[in-house]
Length: 344
Image 1 (cartoon, rainbow, N blue to C red):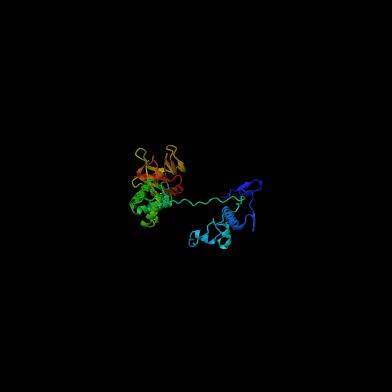
Image 2: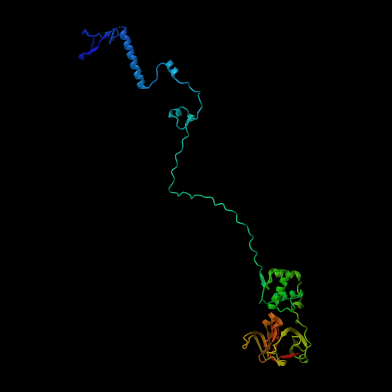
């Protein structure tokens, strides 16, 4: 076996004889003969193999490469995903994803509209009928006039008012209305409301003149002999009536009441000496409208208490009249000096 040694700086090799190997063959420097060519081929192949491994390219023999490669699976159709290479996306126009428009820059000069929120859903409120208002009151205690007289006349037709109409709505009239309301099954207030009036109209007829303005509640008594001549206020305590008579003829008649046993009305014949239309008693501080004075402080005059309460009360000695219209007409006709006759 040859002992090759490096020959100093010359780079020649020797075999111990001191002669350098020839470096040049038929292909040029680097060896000679077949042995040299084989060595060169092996060396070149090794260099190529190292270079290929360093570059990362696979084997260059297609047949050998096919043997080493694993079997190729059948092609599958897949939907391109957003992570595919840009080159694949550029190859097919349809594979390009739609461009997403950039968000619009808000106009800060106009404030954004307030957010709209749907109203909260709540259960519908229960529907209830509003309360029925009370009927309108037409007449009540203290009312006066023709309609009160008609009310009293209609109540009298069906037995709820036992007196003659006076045109004044007092306690007697209120109690008569209350009795009628109880009979009809409505609230017994004593005031004449629209419902009470409709019921009354349906059950009665239009009152006649005599029913509206009867002479008196009771028949007029036979006149005293002193009443047959002249102008006389003929007053009967027995019938409780007053007849205004001129020369024996009855011009008008009206119901009256008298004083109590402690303040009795004087009996006899007296002249009218003073007339006072809006008189007020200085002794009892009570109104005495249409007063016709005949004896001291006693007079014939209108009494609201008599109109309201009927014969349940009494005067302080005067002759009370409960029909205001009649006594007002009487006041205009009577003159000072006319006679007043009071008898049983």
